Every structure is written in structure tokens, then in C-alpha cells.
Length: 410
Image (cartoon, rainbow, N blue to C red; front, top):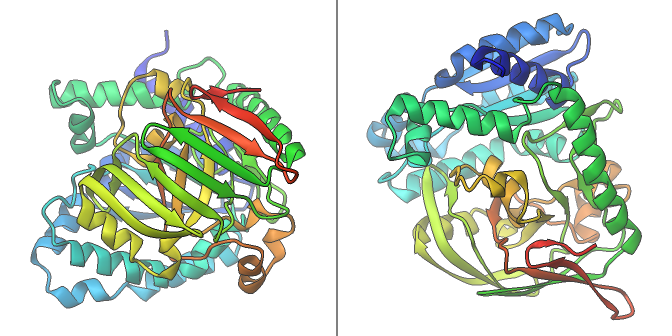
């Protein structure tokens, strides 16, 4: 049985060689919290050993972040450090790879005035819009991975001591990312191949619409002409493979911006802006969110929907079987990177350009003309369950099962 350190080494190697798939002479840009300092040092070592030219680390500190939200004047949340945005854009234009390491507590901003969170999300989204376009068109390699912090771990395992909670969360992350296996890199190649079988099937079908039925859900989603299902590995502008999320269990595409009708209910809490939104239902007409309700975090959800015009529409539709390994773990991670891979989900906001034929080379106007939504935000929320059925509707009206009782029907 592998020791903790052996699994940690495998995980670091995995996110460097499979996640961003660093190339010789390439720069790696890492965004991480000081909670992940040991892991970041290990990633840096692995990246240089794999041939990286530079590793640039932008550190964050949740305590410092919270102090700002509690004590800074209101005007501090109406501006974003442009030099940070320019750095990200310049790095992307020079072919860097990007790794985000998430560690924050889902309650980090609990009790903060929602206007402060909302205002900062908006200015950050605007400042980073060009960088986001590079990410969403796969111009560059990027990955998002998780590392436990004590604050996050004790939220996931509230009945355990902080030390044991962190240990349990590490174990869950190693398992979810296959870092606990003998050869994680080969395991990811095999996993990628399985997901691509689903991708191929759905792309052959060219469904015109999807129809979701579950308790609290009756939703029809039109798909744009030329839509592409994708899953697991992607390729950047230089045709280099990378894995944008680790873990990932989803295959996904874009909905037509104006073609979503009905209502959908969440099945897991959404951690957004350092707050929890839970037990919510969203209502759509001709693509647009026309109403919503939530048992917890309604004000936060309202600010999310009102981020900009595009945040009133959907940008992603993703299929994940309820029997996925993360779902079967029965752990609620309270972190979208993990929880979205236990459940069918949608995203409010911008669409991925690579989810339509020729999309990577289309202008923003062309993407919009083809039905792809644009926004300064992109937030996934979970809707899947063992009771969810999904049908694919073809151009001629023929209906075929895609999901039955929360699992693939083909």
C-alpha cells in the first residue's frame, strides 16, 4: 500500500504531466493558496524536472482575503488589479500553461455583504475577460485541481478532528483523481478513452434537443447546429493534449442560448463566492432565466444571475452518470470541481467556443450568431440524481433514451 508521500508525489506528477502536460521550455503559471504550499513546491519540482522554463506562483491567503472583505472600504471592491489581468493575458499569449489549485472553505465569505462579493466578481470578470476567452477556446493548456485546507476539510468532515478531516479529504482527492493507483498516468489514458466513446456516440447522433425529467425538473434544452460533445482530454492551439479538470467524469456541450425552456432543480449545494446556495429551482423561457427560488443563498444566486446580460442564460450542459466514482464515494465535497463530477450539471454564463464546429477560430460575433452564450462568468450547478431521465430528440422528432434512472441508457 502506497504511503501518503508516494501518493502526493504521484498526484503532483499527474497534474504536471497529464493536467497541464507541461512541455520543454514552457512556462507554468500557478494560482494557489498558502494552504497548498507543500504541494505547490512539489508541483514546481516536477514541472522543472519535466522541462519547464519558468514556474510562476501567484499566492493567495484566505485570511487576508476575508480581512479585506470585512475591513476595506466599499470602493475597494469596484476595482481589480489590472497588472494581474495583464500578466495572465501576456502569459497566455506567450504560450504558458495555467494551473489553479483550489483549497478555500465553502464558507469563506459567509456573512460578507453580498454587494461586495457581487461587485468584485463583476470587475474581476471584466478585467479577465480576454484571458477567459483564451481558456474557453483552448488556446492554452490549463487545469484545475484540489488540495485540502483545514477550513475546507472540517466543513466536509465536521465530526472529525481537523487533523483527521484533512487526512480524509486527501484520501478522497487521491481516490477521485486516481493518484492512489499504481500507474495513475495510464489510468487517466484509459479513463479518457472511455469518456471519448460516449462523446463519439453523442456526436454521431446530432440530437436537436435534450429533455430532462426528474423530481422538481422538467426542462427542454435545444442544442445549436454543429454542436460538439467533448470530454476528458482537450488539445490546445499547438495540438498538445491536456486535462482541464482533475477529476473529470463528464461529457459536455453547449446549449443554444435561446433554446432552454422549463425548470430545473438543484440536487447538491453550490459553493459560490465563498457562500452556499442550496435547494434552488431555476425557471427558463426562450433561454433566459425568468425566475428562481432557493432555500439558502437566494440573494447570492440573485447577484450571480444579475452579473451581466449573459449570466441570465446557460453556457454548458454536462452529463455525468449518478454511478460515477465521486458520486459513489457519498462525499459531498462542497466544491464544484469535485461535486460537478458526481452529477449532471449546467453552467450559468459563458459557453466554450470549442463545443461547436469551427468555434475555436470564430469571432465573438460569429459564436453568438451560432447560439453560444457570452458572459464574464461561468458557474456550474448540479442537477443530477438517481431519478433523472434524459431523452435525446432528433431533428425529425424521434425520441431516444440517453439517461435512465441517473445512468447512461446506451
